[in-house]
Length: 307
Image 1: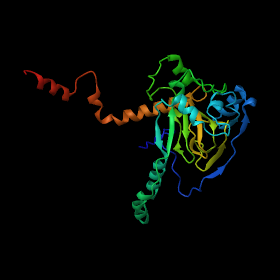
Image 2: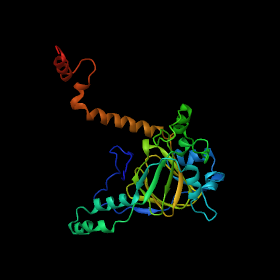
Image 3: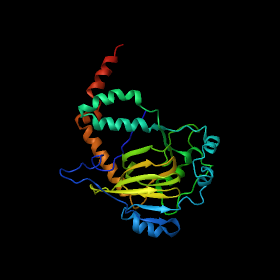
Image 4: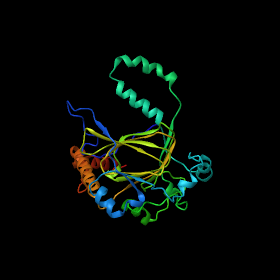
């Protein structure tokens, strides 16, 4: 089963709607590209985190164990190594082929002339195209040390998780950290979303190339396209909507994270969602009061007496 989750980035929880007469979004490739060796923490703060602007960091995976162990001599994913060392891991996967089919059907459901084509397409539907997402490798096998977080990605969120020192059950795919491995075949993709908690994110390609399309929070007609190569890490700022397509068979390492430059985004989101929750229960608030029992529970209490 394919489950698609769209994570809230704006007050409405959805991308801003197109305005009447708005021109099609223009695409550019204006994101800066910098070698990791030239990017200091101070520069990253001033030029990217503080203004909430994306950047592609080249050579970010240099020295990573994953960049050696997970890659064959010809540059492909070393599935033999992964099976040998992590074959017992339980991971969550989505059927990317099924997701894409569902999206296309939703877009065409208003067009009557497509009904017959969709009805007959079941005989031609390809098999599953599995995409392993959100594999919590760092929590699952902390001793392996597949990578080290680049120093300029100042990560409070996962440091808090580590400080709690709560080991996860060996075969439990649910965990509370925000560090993931993504493993997908050519053609798999992630649909339009912005990241959880309005966090920053970074994603480093170990094998393969990805095509990113990013939409700034306040820009409705400007899409930034980025081709990410092996060894590149992309910084996605808070509130930036994006889609990602695997141009090749890909494996990547990803973090969602917070620090002093974007924690106000998260605070605003939590306040908004609390206000929405309060408004959602306004009609039954009296039933939730703790200073007196509700009529319903009083009746149940009387019902039980004398028996």
